[in-house]
Length: 269
Length: 269
DNA sequence: ACCCTTCTGTACGATTCCGTATGCAGGCGC
DNA sequence: GCGCCTGCATACGGAATCGTACAGAAGGGT
Image (cartoon, rainbow over all chains, first blue to last red; front, side):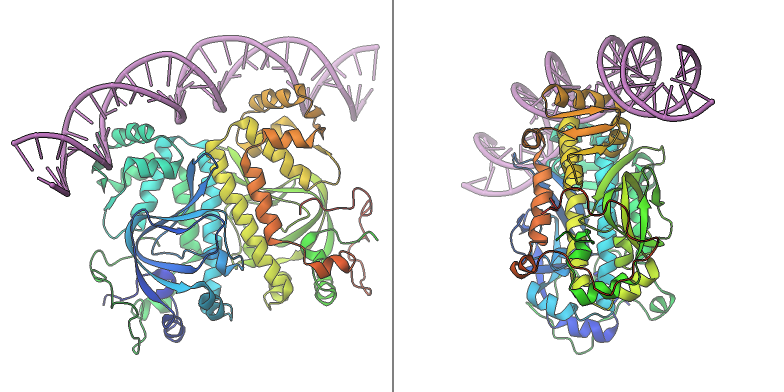
């Protein structure tokens, strides 16, 4: 059975709790380039991506940007709300279009701060995000653009439903804090080696195994930590995967199209 | 009145709660170079530094290191415990000797996870730490060793009781993920300009204002976020600063020496 | 007083990446 | 079919940093 909720944080909830949360959720499209949070501004909604990709991006005064975190269907955008801070000094921007559930920050606080399984898993998710940031901090310092490109592609791919996604060299450059031309060179090498192919933003992972060889260890470190923190418990596997409350009424304009398409497995585990 | 508890997270607690926490605390010395947490290993204690400095350090397989977080009297070492993860993929190492309160991880979980003011402020501290990591990730990518050195010195200085502390070029190199020789060159420039002076590890900040000019914006971004999250509420300022329960019995071998020396103000605010 | 360790100063070729620029190509709008 | 915008390829001098190496200086131990 394919599930209707693909966001892992939501899908892992006990039926009762998911049902309760669900009434506060609305479905929204994530459009590439859309800025969800501006640096320092009040956070109005938290997002639970179902498809697509959102970046946490640190911005410098001269306009330089670096991605410091990445959120897809495995996580949530809006941890600062969860932590009791109304804003954060970084920007959240949609890199790969898709759709997400979202919830008003106020409602989220009200709903979640009472504790429960959801709360616990959000704490763990926060730890995972910190690991990501920490490792990226080290990675940015020690590894080449080429290695970091490979890690990025792997992390993106983990959060996608197919081995293909849309990211221009320009966008990647902003994520890695490098020049566009530098990305072209690095990506060119990967293409030459048959590891990836791409054309006008459409990137295709051709040989994932090789990509992992070219990547720095940071990718694996981060992934291992995610896996450790969100190890699937035996009983929840037996229970037939993610559930959705029977009585749910779909908010917004109905379920997003394509929700049952693509690969079934969530690869980030 | 000088306070006996200088750790800000503890000092900010209401009397009752501090008293409760205090029974679980023991006093320990932090010795330079001491490793408090090994990467990936179970965390046994959480630490609340009173003096000195602890680094969160990411380690690569080839032995390369980069600091991704820094903890002094403004914070706590052991956020992963708080978040429900028993370990984290980075190392905690004492950079500047001092002393701290520590608490068994189990007791900490039992004591803290019940909620209360402490819990709330730990959530905020987690946010501050994430900001630090995030900004450092960007900084490592975009700024020169010289700029980053300045930021580091400022962050260390903020957590010290005097404008002087012990850090060799070698140690700084490991924190910044750079070569020792590179640090010598950068530090040499600062000395030439009269901004700092140093001799065999003893570093003296001579002109803080200039140091801030040389530093990248990251220092200020991080500091601003700390200040925002831990803005002192009016009434707690009126109440005469940090308090300690009247009935406290000092754990360990009594209060550490020197606890009433040094500057009174906690500059990290 | 002397040794020995630790810390610092400095140098030099190699490497990575930047800043910038110029040209080509795919694909959309008209 | 023709422009035009966006995305990609490539080049070249220059800056930052690396890897490495060697030597001087400070200071503690014997």
